[in-house]
Structure formats: C-alpha cells, structure tokens
Amino acid sequence: MNTNSHLLINLFLLKRLFKKHFEEPGPWFTQVVLLGALLPDLPMFGFYAYYAFIDPQPEERIWNTLYFLDSWQVFFNCFNSLPIFILLLCAGLYAKKQLVSAFSLSSILHILGDLFLHVDDGHAHFFPLSNFVLHSPVSYWDKHHYGNIFAPLELLAVCVVSFFLWQEYKRWYSK
Image 1 (cartoon, helix red, strand yellow):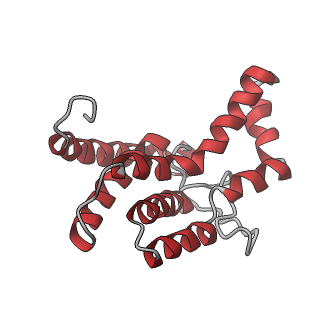
Image 2 (cartoon, rainbow, N blue to C red):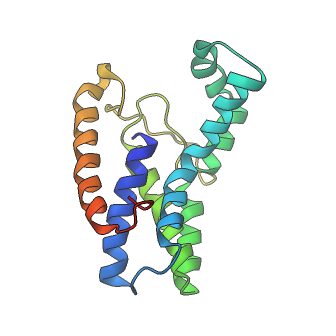
C-alpha cells in the first residue's frame, strides 16, 4: 500500500482498538501511531534520497538494480520484520506501555498490509528468522497484477477513514 494509506488506515483502526480494549488513548498517541505506520517505509525514502540527490542514479537503475542489492534488502527487512515488532509489542503489553504497544501495532499493521500486495518487490517479513519473501499475485500499484483494481479500492478506503478522522479531530492542525 501507499505510505499515506498506511498512516490513515492505521490511525483509524488503532484509535478504535485502543478505545475499546485499552484505556483512552493518551497524549502522543496519534504521533506514535503515525510514526509506527511510517517506519517500515522510512528506509526506502532514505535509500531513494541518497541515489536521487547524493549519488545521482537513473530512476531505472535505482528501482531495478540498486533496490534489489542484498545489502539494501537486509536493511529494508530489519524495518519490515514481523518478529522484531511482535517482540516489541509483547514488551509493551507486558510493561503496560500504551505508546510502545501502539507504535509496534501500527508497524505490524503496515507490514501485514504490505504482505499480500507486493509481487516482486516485497520484503522478508519474517527476518531474521527467515529470508522467505512472499510473492503475491496482487500488487498495490502494478496494473499487470491487479493494481488497476486494488488502487481504487485503496483510495476508497482512505477516503472513508479520512472522513471519519476529519470528524474526530477538533483542532485545525490535527485535521
């Protein structure tokens, strides 16, 4: 999924989960959930910025060659690892740390959202336990793998959750 979709959908889902099953979300909850939703994609933004601005490379080389280098894949996998974030979630729940739990759950939701939406550009989501990469038949962007169907559905979901989030937030800067 697109990064902004992860941000909005995770915030929508986790606000409801925490209100229903935990205490009322406290200060910094929104920021922590957004950071957790952003973290799995953050290394790729840095990767792209490096090859676009510091060591300029053609777009085709960035995404078709450099992206798939083992060193970059291991780095990306660390930030897309279900075992790492599940351990962090367990630690947060054990210590009764709402923000740690919210952060790790948001990262887990991001990873699960991506798990079935990458055809040939996915990550080893079970790293470091396994280097297995699930090659889904569905892509969130590639029209040759149903991206032309999934992308509008993703946009619809983002519009729906945005409508509800817009109503929930009262301050102009939160909206």
